[in-house]
Image 1 (cartoon, rainbow, N blue to C red):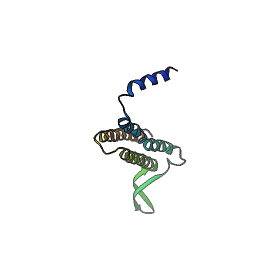
Image 2 (tube, one colour; image 1 turned 90 degrees about the horizontal axis):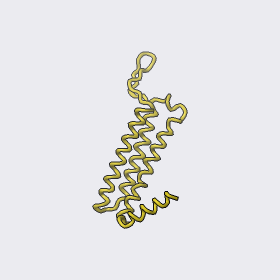
Image 3 (cartoon, helix red, strand yellow; image 1 turned 90 degrees about the vertical axis):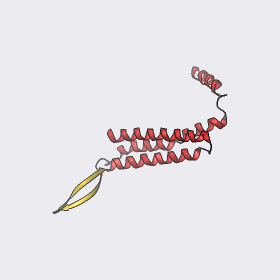
Image 4 (spheres, helix red, strand yellow; image 1 turned 135 degrees about the horizontal axis):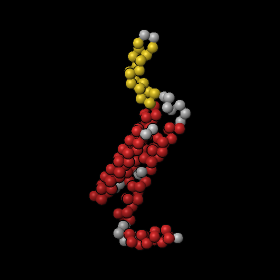
Length: 132
């Protein structure tokens, strides 16, 4: 009950400051984060796929005698995680771009959204690559 009272009090304080024209782009910009969050969730679920830790993507195979020598190998887990994260980021940036309208205030909202999304993407990518 106290939560509803606090919510009503907050609404009474801010309803005059935000009209629909100013507040709607901010609300819509929250929806632009959904593809990024879904991409992060999908990247997290990759580690539960069977045999994902055993798969490698090998480059520069050199034949020596009867066998091959692998010069560079990248775990498939890292590649799939990065593909999912980059896809989520690119769809989120596209959604943020499509949501904003042409105008001076919406340019700042778009720049803020892009900065927050890139910071979130950088932190998540660091965590996935360092702590998997």
